[in-house]
Image: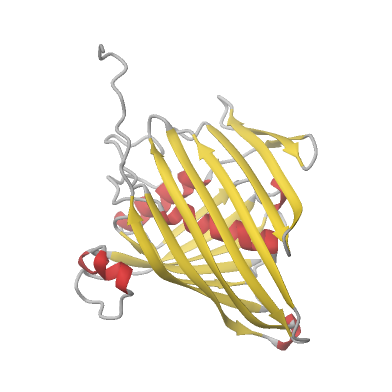
Length: 290
Protein backbone atom coordinates (compact mmCIF):
# COMPACT_ATOMS: atom_id res chain seq x y z
CA UNK A 1 0.00 0.00 0.00
CA UNK A 2 2.70 2.51 0.97
CA UNK A 3 4.84 2.34 -2.16
CA UNK A 4 1.83 2.09 -4.47
CA UNK A 5 0.19 5.07 -2.79
CA UNK A 6 3.32 7.17 -3.29
CA UNK A 7 3.40 6.21 -6.96
CA UNK A 8 -0.22 7.17 -7.54
CA UNK A 9 -0.07 10.42 -5.60
CA UNK A 10 3.03 11.45 -7.49
CA UNK A 11 1.11 10.87 -10.68
CA UNK A 12 -1.72 13.06 -9.43
CA UNK A 13 0.76 15.75 -8.54
CA UNK A 14 2.44 15.73 -11.92
CA UNK A 15 -0.94 15.92 -13.65
CA UNK A 16 -2.08 18.68 -11.33
CA UNK A 17 0.86 20.97 -11.98
CA UNK A 18 -0.02 21.80 -15.59
CA UNK A 19 -1.23 25.15 -16.76
CA UNK A 20 -3.39 25.58 -19.83
CA UNK A 21 -0.94 24.58 -22.53
CA UNK A 22 -0.12 25.74 -25.99
CA UNK A 23 -0.60 22.20 -27.14
CA UNK A 24 0.59 20.31 -30.13
CA UNK A 25 0.72 16.52 -30.69
CA UNK A 26 1.04 14.55 -27.46
CA UNK A 27 4.36 13.06 -28.52
CA UNK A 28 5.95 16.42 -29.13
CA UNK A 29 7.95 17.47 -26.10
CA UNK A 30 9.39 20.57 -27.73
CA UNK A 31 6.43 22.74 -28.66
CA UNK A 32 6.73 25.57 -31.16
CA UNK A 33 5.49 27.95 -28.51
CA UNK A 34 6.53 27.78 -24.83
CA UNK A 35 4.20 25.94 -22.47
CA UNK A 36 3.79 27.69 -19.14
CA UNK A 37 3.34 25.59 -16.01
CA UNK A 38 1.57 27.09 -13.01
CA UNK A 39 3.40 26.74 -9.68
CA UNK A 40 0.95 25.91 -6.92
CA UNK A 41 0.39 24.18 -3.61
CA UNK A 42 -2.61 21.86 -3.29
CA UNK A 43 -3.97 20.00 -0.26
CA UNK A 44 -6.40 17.08 -0.37
CA UNK A 45 -8.29 15.28 2.39
CA UNK A 46 -8.02 11.51 1.89
CA UNK A 47 -10.82 9.15 2.98
CA UNK A 48 -11.80 5.54 2.33
CA UNK A 49 -14.21 5.28 -0.60
CA UNK A 50 -14.88 1.55 -0.69
CA UNK A 51 -13.24 -1.69 0.52
CA UNK A 52 -13.78 -5.35 -0.18
CA UNK A 53 -13.75 -7.71 2.79
CA UNK A 54 -10.54 -9.30 1.50
CA UNK A 55 -8.66 -6.04 2.01
CA UNK A 56 -9.09 -6.14 5.79
CA UNK A 57 -9.41 -2.32 5.76
CA UNK A 58 -12.25 -0.53 7.53
CA UNK A 59 -11.05 3.07 7.51
CA UNK A 60 -8.52 5.47 5.97
CA UNK A 61 -8.12 9.12 6.90
CA UNK A 62 -5.33 11.48 6.00
CA UNK A 63 -4.03 14.37 3.96
CA UNK A 64 -1.95 14.87 0.83
CA UNK A 65 0.09 18.00 0.27
CA UNK A 66 2.21 18.74 -2.77
CA UNK A 67 3.96 21.79 -4.05
CA UNK A 68 5.16 22.46 -7.57
CA UNK A 69 7.70 25.17 -8.45
CA UNK A 70 10.21 25.92 -11.20
CA UNK A 71 10.32 26.90 -14.84
CA UNK A 72 11.24 25.50 -18.22
CA UNK A 73 14.67 27.10 -17.78
CA UNK A 74 15.51 25.98 -14.24
CA UNK A 75 13.60 22.72 -14.32
CA UNK A 76 10.53 21.62 -12.33
CA UNK A 77 10.55 20.65 -8.67
CA UNK A 78 7.73 18.70 -7.04
CA UNK A 79 7.63 18.11 -3.28
CA UNK A 80 4.94 15.83 -1.91
CA UNK A 81 3.89 14.51 1.49
CA UNK A 82 1.03 12.18 2.30
CA UNK A 83 0.10 11.17 5.86
CA UNK A 84 -2.67 8.61 6.38
CA UNK A 85 -4.05 6.59 9.27
CA UNK A 86 -5.35 3.18 8.24
CA UNK A 87 -7.65 1.06 10.43
CA UNK A 88 -7.97 -2.70 9.90
CA UNK A 89 -10.79 -5.11 10.68
CA UNK A 90 -9.21 -5.84 14.09
CA UNK A 91 -9.46 -2.19 15.08
CA UNK A 92 -5.72 -1.60 14.92
CA UNK A 93 -4.36 1.52 13.24
CA UNK A 94 -1.14 2.25 11.39
CA UNK A 95 0.20 5.68 10.51
CA UNK A 96 2.01 6.01 7.18
CA UNK A 97 4.01 9.05 6.18
CA UNK A 98 5.27 9.28 2.59
CA UNK A 99 7.62 12.04 1.48
CA UNK A 100 9.07 12.57 -1.97
CA UNK A 101 10.94 15.19 -3.93
CA UNK A 102 11.66 15.17 -7.65
CA UNK A 103 13.35 17.49 -10.13
CA UNK A 104 12.98 17.26 -13.89
CA UNK A 105 14.89 19.24 -16.49
CA UNK A 106 12.69 21.48 -18.60
CA UNK A 107 13.40 19.54 -21.80
CA UNK A 108 12.96 16.16 -20.12
CA UNK A 109 16.58 15.07 -20.51
CA UNK A 110 17.36 14.63 -16.80
CA UNK A 111 15.35 13.50 -13.79
CA UNK A 112 16.27 13.23 -10.09
CA UNK A 113 14.13 11.59 -7.41
CA UNK A 114 14.15 10.67 -3.76
CA UNK A 115 11.51 9.34 -1.41
CA UNK A 116 11.17 8.16 2.18
CA UNK A 117 8.43 6.03 3.72
CA UNK A 118 7.66 6.01 7.45
CA UNK A 119 5.45 3.53 9.27
CA UNK A 120 4.33 4.56 12.76
CA UNK A 121 7.12 7.19 12.84
CA UNK A 122 9.83 4.65 11.97
CA UNK A 123 11.79 5.16 8.77
CA UNK A 124 11.37 2.32 6.31
CA UNK A 125 12.27 2.37 2.62
CA UNK A 126 14.40 5.15 1.15
CA UNK A 127 14.83 5.51 -2.61
CA UNK A 128 17.22 7.88 -4.34
CA UNK A 129 18.53 8.11 -7.87
CA UNK A 130 18.80 9.98 -11.14
CA UNK A 131 17.98 9.28 -14.77
CA UNK A 132 19.48 10.67 -17.96
CA UNK A 133 18.13 10.45 -21.50
CA UNK A 134 20.83 9.51 -23.99
CA UNK A 135 21.06 10.87 -27.56
CA UNK A 136 19.43 7.66 -28.84
CA UNK A 137 16.41 8.37 -26.54
CA UNK A 138 17.24 5.44 -24.25
CA UNK A 139 17.21 6.27 -20.52
CA UNK A 140 20.01 5.36 -18.12
CA UNK A 141 19.10 5.18 -14.42
CA UNK A 142 21.60 5.24 -11.57
CA UNK A 143 20.27 4.34 -8.11
CA UNK A 144 22.09 5.19 -4.89
CA UNK A 145 19.35 4.03 -2.47
CA UNK A 146 18.26 1.47 -1.33
CA UNK A 147 21.37 0.09 -3.05
CA UNK A 148 23.66 1.06 -5.90
CA UNK A 149 22.32 -0.18 -9.21
CA UNK A 150 22.03 0.81 -12.86
CA UNK A 151 19.13 0.31 -15.26
CA UNK A 152 18.89 0.87 -19.00
CA UNK A 153 15.38 1.66 -20.21
CA UNK A 154 14.58 1.39 -23.90
CA UNK A 155 11.60 2.67 -25.81
CA UNK A 156 9.71 5.93 -25.43
CA UNK A 157 9.85 6.19 -21.64
CA UNK A 158 8.47 9.45 -20.24
CA UNK A 159 9.33 11.20 -17.01
CA UNK A 160 6.42 12.57 -14.89
CA UNK A 161 6.32 16.12 -16.27
CA UNK A 162 6.61 14.84 -19.83
CA UNK A 163 3.63 12.59 -19.27
CA UNK A 164 1.64 15.41 -17.70
CA UNK A 165 2.36 17.66 -20.66
CA UNK A 166 1.37 14.92 -23.06
CA UNK A 167 -1.87 14.37 -21.15
CA UNK A 168 -2.80 18.05 -21.22
CA UNK A 169 -1.81 18.34 -24.86
CA UNK A 170 -4.00 15.37 -25.74
CA UNK A 171 -6.97 16.87 -23.89
CA UNK A 172 -6.58 20.23 -25.59
CA UNK A 173 -6.22 18.56 -28.99
CA UNK A 174 -9.49 16.69 -28.50
CA UNK A 175 -7.92 13.24 -28.16
CA UNK A 176 -9.69 10.68 -25.98
CA UNK A 177 -6.83 8.19 -25.48
CA UNK A 178 -3.17 8.45 -24.52
CA UNK A 179 -0.88 5.47 -23.99
CA UNK A 180 2.61 5.89 -22.60
CA UNK A 181 5.40 4.26 -20.62
CA UNK A 182 6.29 6.16 -17.42
CA UNK A 183 9.35 6.09 -15.19
CA UNK A 184 9.30 8.18 -12.00
CA UNK A 185 11.53 6.28 -9.57
CA UNK A 186 8.72 4.56 -7.69
CA UNK A 187 8.81 0.93 -6.50
CA UNK A 188 12.42 1.43 -5.30
CA UNK A 189 13.32 2.81 -8.72
CA UNK A 190 12.97 -0.55 -10.41
CA UNK A 191 9.80 -0.30 -12.49
CA UNK A 192 8.45 1.18 -15.68
CA UNK A 193 4.66 1.33 -15.94
CA UNK A 194 2.53 1.02 -19.05
CA UNK A 195 -0.31 3.52 -18.79
CA UNK A 196 -3.56 4.04 -20.63
CA UNK A 197 -5.35 7.34 -20.09
CA UNK A 198 -8.96 7.87 -21.15
CA UNK A 199 -9.92 11.53 -21.57
CA UNK A 200 -13.60 12.41 -21.45
CA UNK A 201 -15.41 15.14 -23.31
CA UNK A 202 -14.60 18.67 -22.10
CA UNK A 203 -16.91 20.18 -19.49
CA UNK A 204 -17.78 23.77 -20.39
CA UNK A 205 -17.03 26.61 -17.94
CA UNK A 206 -19.89 27.61 -15.68
CA UNK A 207 -21.72 24.27 -15.84
CA UNK A 208 -20.58 22.86 -12.47
CA UNK A 209 -22.47 23.66 -9.28
CA UNK A 210 -20.81 21.34 -6.72
CA UNK A 211 -17.34 22.76 -6.29
CA UNK A 212 -15.36 22.86 -3.05
CA UNK A 213 -14.80 26.32 -1.56
CA UNK A 214 -11.11 26.45 -2.61
CA UNK A 215 -12.11 25.53 -6.15
CA UNK A 216 -14.68 28.34 -6.22
CA UNK A 217 -12.31 30.88 -4.68
CA UNK A 218 -9.58 30.12 -7.20
CA UNK A 219 -11.84 30.37 -10.23
CA UNK A 220 -12.09 26.74 -11.34
CA UNK A 221 -15.77 27.22 -12.20
CA UNK A 222 -14.75 29.52 -15.04
CA UNK A 223 -12.39 27.02 -16.68
CA UNK A 224 -12.89 24.14 -19.07
CA UNK A 225 -12.11 20.72 -17.58
CA UNK A 226 -11.85 17.06 -18.56
CA UNK A 227 -12.67 13.84 -16.69
CA UNK A 228 -9.55 11.65 -16.86
CA UNK A 229 -9.02 7.99 -15.97
CA UNK A 230 -5.53 6.43 -16.02
CA UNK A 231 -4.79 2.73 -15.63
CA UNK A 232 -1.31 1.57 -14.57
CA UNK A 233 -0.13 -1.81 -15.81
CA UNK A 234 2.89 -3.89 -14.91
CA UNK A 235 5.28 -3.59 -17.85
CA UNK A 236 5.78 -6.72 -19.98
CA UNK A 237 3.25 -8.87 -18.08
CA UNK A 238 0.48 -8.56 -20.65
CA UNK A 239 -2.11 -8.38 -17.87
CA UNK A 240 -5.26 -6.62 -19.08
CA UNK A 241 -6.24 -5.66 -15.51
CA UNK A 242 -4.46 -2.54 -14.20
CA UNK A 243 -2.47 -2.73 -10.99
CA UNK A 244 -4.38 0.37 -9.98
CA UNK A 245 -6.40 3.17 -11.51
CA UNK A 246 -6.81 6.86 -10.81
CA UNK A 247 -9.73 9.06 -11.87
CA UNK A 248 -9.74 12.85 -11.55
CA UNK A 249 -11.04 16.08 -13.06
CA UNK A 250 -8.29 18.01 -14.86
CA UNK A 251 -8.75 21.76 -15.35
CA UNK A 252 -7.22 23.93 -18.04
CA UNK A 253 -5.05 25.73 -15.48
CA UNK A 254 -3.70 22.37 -14.36
CA UNK A 255 -5.48 21.87 -11.04
CA UNK A 256 -7.03 18.47 -10.35
CA UNK A 257 -9.98 17.63 -8.11
CA UNK A 258 -12.49 14.79 -7.56
CA UNK A 259 -9.69 12.26 -7.05
CA UNK A 260 -10.50 8.56 -6.85
CA UNK A 261 -7.73 5.98 -6.52
CA UNK A 262 -8.71 2.33 -6.98
CA UNK A 263 -6.19 -0.28 -5.74
CA UNK A 264 -8.43 -3.25 -6.55
CA UNK A 265 -9.31 -4.41 -3.02
CA UNK A 266 -10.09 -0.88 -1.88
CA UNK A 267 -10.32 2.68 -3.14
CA UNK A 268 -9.71 6.11 -1.63
CA UNK A 269 -11.19 9.52 -2.37
CA UNK A 270 -9.32 12.82 -2.36
CA UNK A 271 -11.15 16.11 -1.76
CA UNK A 272 -9.50 19.45 -2.51
CA UNK A 273 -9.33 21.45 0.74
CA UNK A 274 -6.76 24.14 -0.07
CA UNK A 275 -5.29 25.66 -3.21
CA UNK A 276 -2.64 28.36 -3.43
CA UNK A 277 -1.08 29.70 -6.61
CA UNK A 278 2.61 30.44 -6.19
CA UNK A 279 4.75 33.06 -7.87
CA UNK A 280 6.12 31.88 -11.19
CA UNK A 281 9.85 32.14 -11.83
CA UNK A 282 10.68 34.02 -15.00
CA UNK A 283 13.23 32.55 -17.39
CA UNK A 284 16.33 34.70 -17.65
CA UNK A 285 17.65 35.74 -21.04
CA UNK A 286 21.20 34.31 -21.16
CA UNK A 287 22.25 37.02 -23.62
CA UNK A 288 21.05 39.88 -21.41
CA UNK A 289 23.68 41.96 -19.61
CA UNK A 290 23.38 42.83 -15.93
